[in-house]
Each structure stands twice: as structure tokens, then as C-alpha cells.
Length: 306
Length: 295
Image 1: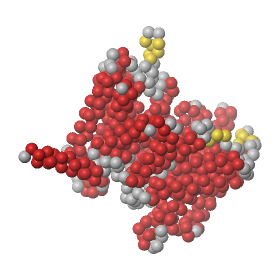
Image 2: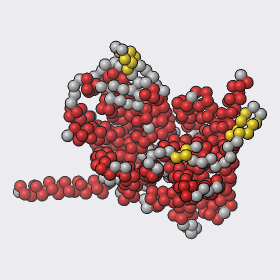
Image 3: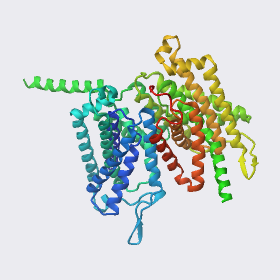
Image 4: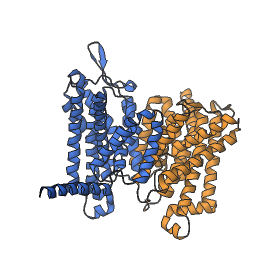
């Protein structure tokens, strides 16, 4: 049972990572910096609870805000470049953050041990959950409460005017600009929101694994971040969730019995999925079909009652 | 003081020569981007894959250096075409995200295939060239790096000749400039794209073999750093510019070796990223920016 609860925690955290990339992708920007914001959230959140003795919730909120501010600051120069240049610029930013933490040393003495981030060794003993006696199921519920909050916010945003404007910029920047949309405001706010979500996810990740180090936040994690929304489709936030369940639940955990062959299949299945469903697993037609199915059932129920 | 200058020049020379491999990888990215306006993230993995195929040949026959290089190039070309077929050919041209993601899948697939076949152990790559030290005044130049540089120059010149002096090259450049107009002139876009992937892949295979011989070992762990460096070189050089990629490759190679010498290996890549940011802020188009008005 603990295994499945642990899996639920991982899926929740990766969903946050994927949603942070989703927010940015809606405006048509491919950002590989999400792992960097995730790392900032992880380190800031961990330092606040371990070194400053904060509660995890307040530490997490501040971690999200810090990551959001950094992301906003990155958003401005990133506006100057598009397409491939943006991919490279954000990759470089993410790597720069990782390398910063690789060289980052800030340890204080507590009792007879040194605690805090220590360069290449990483940051150990982020044990807020364990020290305060949270059970795994409570941790999972906490993580999923945050995930559902973020999902609901993005869902609501998508149906509001702001979401429409974001999508307009993503579809055709020039047309949106001609219609009076401020590209700067849209892109920077999307970047900032993505940063906040990644920061929240990072802080949760740090407390969930209790040990973080620079190598966990490399290009691979950044690629996973954009893989979730692209694989899931940008039609709905549920696409990202579906893709995380597909990758983490099925490809990573479900195929574990294949042993070594699993990793081979992993890449091949991504290639196959993109060829068969280039707009994502939950693309517009799939969402429409789902909606039709649901309304049909509801209508059927109404008929039965009548 | 005197020793400091010599150290500086020495690491600059070593770095610039090793930068040849970055330059070639950068050319590969730039070439594919120039023709298709899409990013192929599995390019460096395919290059290393090509070098591994030449190792496979070495297992059955002690082939001479040039044959190894040629095998590596052929392997790179074959993998390039495979990438084209699996990630670009059957996805609509107006979809930018799907091929990008598919090439990531291909990157993982190639990496994992290598790790699976070699049981995860890095393999020794033979020295393709005699290992002599040449004394140039107070400095020493590693002759194998000099060979790497020379082979890089030959491969690049060959590519330039192909692009600017042959019918295939004209067709490639036509597709790069105006795909629709090129199609209307009777140029098969799919075939030209496949050719470009084969060409870039062959070049990548050469780069993979050169990296293997310069580093001494081959490992799938090499692919991600090379991918990142290649992308940086592409952007610093200016998208779609082959001379830019060459210059940027040598620049990045020299720069990172100097930083490594003076600041240590753990800070090396951090400064390379800072160099890239400096370019993005002050010269976003790169060294040889294409004329304005075109994407």
C-alpha cells in the first residue's frame, strides 16, 4: 500500500512540474528553464524549514514566490528571443541554476552537525514531515490538495478572459498583438505563474525526498517538464495530468517488470505517441468525445427519470 | 608572469582545437534548423551513436583510422535518416511541438540502446592519430588535437562544397529559403529533407569519432553535455549560419578551457552559460545574424 501512496506523491509532484510548463506553453513558449525554477523552489523551501525552522506550508509559499519572481525576471530578457533561441536560452538558464547550486555552500552548525546545502554533496536531512510525525498518507493528501488547487486555478484561468488572451498569443502572436494584446504582459505573466507553480512543486519535492542535489535538476528533468503538457495535449489541464499518470504510472512504474528493456521502450513509446497523436493524448477531438460521452450519459439518466 | 601567459596560451590552444568538435555539432544543428526550421534534439545522441557503430566494426576488424572515421560518418548518416523518418516525416509540417518531443524520445532511445548494448560501461575509443607532442616555442600542441582540427576543417569544406557547388546543394538551399516555391519547381521536399539529415548525420558521426578519440572514451553520458554545448554554439554563431557555428565552436572551446584552467572544472560550464547570456542580451542574433526580416 505504501508503494501506491508513494507513487501518488510522485505523480502529484510531477503534475505540478508539468503544469508549470503548461502555463508557459499556452503562450507558445517552449521553456526548458522549469527544472531551474523547480530547483530554486526545492532549495529555498528546504532551507526555510531546515535552517529557519518554518512550517512547510509557509516555506512552500515563499519558495513559490521566490521562484515566481526569478521566473518573471527571466521572462523579460526571454521576450527578446523566440523559438529555438528561447529553447537554448532557457536551457542555459536552467543549467546555470543547477551549476549555481553545484557550487552553493551554506551550512550552519546545529548541535554537533553541520546542516544546509553543501555544494556537490547536496542538501540532506530535509525532514520536516518525518520530524513532525506526518504519515505517508497525510503527506500524499497534502501534496494532492496543492495539486488540485493549482489544477483548479489553471482550469478557471483557462475559461477566463486572461486564458483566452494567453491562447491567442500562443496561436498567433502577430494577430494577437494587432488586436491590442500586450505580448510583454502575457508572456511575462505566464512565465511568472509557471515559476510559482514550479517553485511549489520543488519545495514539495525537497520535503518528499528529504535529500536534494544539483544533479536531480538537470536537462532531463526540464525535458520531462515540457514532455508532460506536449504529450498530454494543450487542450485541457487534464491532458498534463493524464500524461504524468501515463509516464510515471505506466512507463516508469508499470513497466518495471521489464527491467532493463523498460528504458528502451520509454523513448520508443514517446516517439510512437507523437507520431500517432501529434497534438497530444488528450487533444481537442478526444476532449470533445469525452464531453459528448459525459453529456450523453447525463441525458440518458434524465430520460430514465422521466 | 611569463609562466602565466604561457599557461593561458596553452589552454587557449588546446581548447580551440577541441572546440572543433563543438563547431561540427553546431553546424549539424544549424543545417537542420536552416532547412526545416525545426530543432532536432537527438542530433548529438545520433553522432555518438555513429561513433559507437564504428567501435562495433573495430570489434570484428582492426580497421585503419580513416575507415573508422568513414564508418562513424556512415553510421551517423543512417541514424540521421532514421531520426528523420521517425520524428519528422509523418508529422504535419505546421506542428512544431510534436517533432521536438519525438526527437527527445529518440535521444532517450539512442542513449538507452547504447547503454543496453554496452551494459552501461564506457568503452575505450582508440587513438585515431599518432600521439606526439609538437613543441611550438615554449608551448606544446597535442598532435591528436591538431588532427581533430584538420579533419574538422576537411569535413566542413566538403559540406560547403556540397551545399554551394552541387545540384543537391542548390536544392537544399532552395528548400531552406522557400519550401513552397521549391516544391513548385519540382524539388521533392521530403527527399531533400532526408538528404539534409543524412548529411548532418554524417558530419555528426565524424564529430562523434573525433570526440571519442580526443576524450579517449565513449559513453552515452557524453550526449547531453554535447547537445547543450552544440545548441549554445548554434545560438552564439547565429542561427542558420555555418561560418558562425565554426567560429562560435572554436570560441566556446577556447573560452571553456581557459575558465577550466583558472577557475576549476566545477565552474567551467557556469561561465559558458554566462557567455551565452551576454550574447543573448547584447547580440541576440549571434555572431553572424541572418539578414533581418526572415524568421
